[in-house]
Length: 265
Ligand code: DGL
Image (cartoon, rainbow, N blue to C red; front, side, top):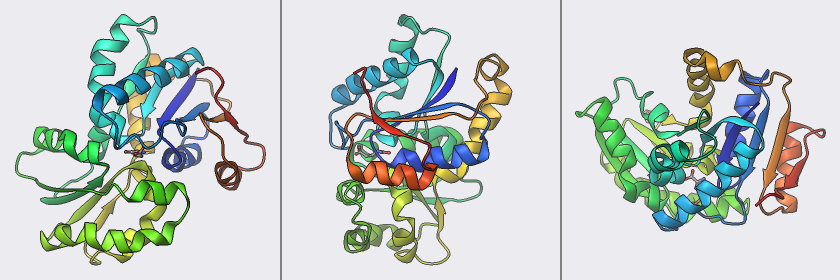
């Protein structure tokens, strides 16, 4: 069986690239729901409906677990997927994991944390809730950054510099010690974000932390780990193909990895 990675678009590919380097033995299925992107401006009900469809498709393709790399889906639909969908589906023994809890678990001694994410991620309060569970004394300063995803998907990375100046200003004024990149896409503009922040502000990027978290999860869950195929195969699917994605997939995963349009949805 496979490990599934679900994102709304391109961003999650960065997470998969790291996983494939750090846990190369496993088989992976990546699903980017590019046809329905951006998720960040959709209602909770719309996000849940799309997420059920995608997760189901991934389970049908033999994923033992699906990691929801998308912060928007993790914020708005993870709990409902785990509590309402999974126990009543025909995939009961499978797992659905989110990205928010593992992210906030890495903040260590940091007391003033900044967050950038989509409108829905910020409005959901999911990061605030998870942080409060871990340490109620941590202060979170969150800013929705809705202009970024479309620019990143269009691969106009340097066009994010100006909007970033405006988005980061209140966070810098609040003297944050670390900034969570609370959207898979933002890893692609890490350079631009770094340049807009004071040097002492640490960047918390999910592609840096997920492999370690997944590895320790699989150690704690041998019943899942033992079901996983170990031939290092990677399947990449998007719901709407475009030449830019194919080029990027080849660049990151090599010529032999093929990006195809998902046919089952
Ligand atoms: N990839 C999504 C996330 O991590 C955001 C992109 C979108 O709006 O679809 O939040």
